[in-house]
Picture: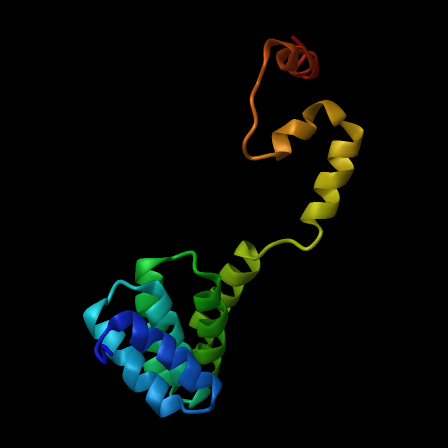
Length: 147
């Protein structure tokens, strides 16, 4: 109904790519990126579509643009490390690999957090993003800090 609607083009591109129509996906994602150059999702999906076609230089440009928008995007670090390796840019590949390794979730973090909370049940409420502190809550914390 609205063939140039960027949202429709974006989702059509995802459908096209999943169906193996990478050229159609790229054509639609390029239109979205032209209209919204600061869209991290569009940059990521366009870069990945180029990557799937082994168009590494084009993918590199999209992922670098994505990093300019969101320097902490883990997908960008991960895929750029691979792209740089394939392009023979080993120093940049090592930097991106290190950034990815440094920022990715630690698979043992939840286990360590649970073990800590088992040893300190008075702090278990602190692991809940939305909670209230009452006067009664302050007493265990003051004891923990030595006050």
